[in-house]
Length: 252
Ligand code: DGL
Image (cartoon, rainbow, N blue to C red; front, side, top):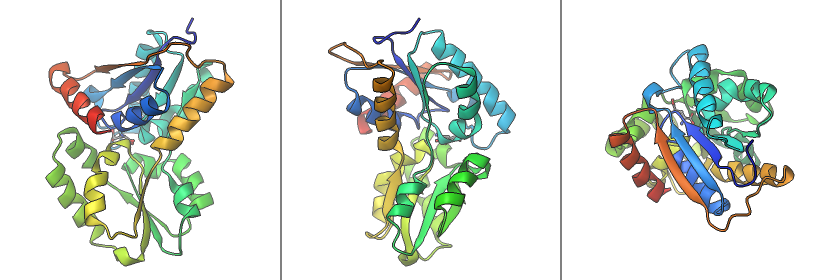
């Protein structure tokens, strides 16, 4: 049975969730985090829903076998596909992610909001429900192939990708860009460089960390340990993926 000193599972299709992990560890420095990147099956966002649900179930089984006390789905795509179903089936607290459209809408000054995410996140009912509430002025901008550029640290190519995708928009009319995929958070320095200064760049990482802290507190699951730890795992090739995770964790 997991207890207060058990680890918190965090997962993504790959290294994107490391951007969330950085925020989680800053918010809850005394907790132990077990991060799992499902690199073997990445990307999730361009695959059929049923296939991704199967991968997510496999990751959950793996994390629960290590007695985690809660799971953070550090992936917008996996949250859209699986969070509601997993919550209905499991007792374990499950914290998911969603594109930061609500804060973007609250700060909107009459311009457009560009929501960058995987094709799957933008297609599924979860995002539609968010869009119905906060989507005034919001434009869906699916970015197939962009997570792969982050996975391979091809940041110059990622910059060209973004510049090409933004060509269709008059950036003077854009108030905010929402990073609706945890991989894209690593592209923030590039976005700050290529977007005009008035465009806000929003992600859901801080909100997710606050939500985890709230849920652990409510359930009496905050640790009593003095010092936290981070363990990194991958379903891919550890020799190449683990050093990449370390590099990105230092940036996060
Ligand atoms: N990092 C992911 C997300 O937040 C998914 C990328 C993918 O596997 O396509 O949506």
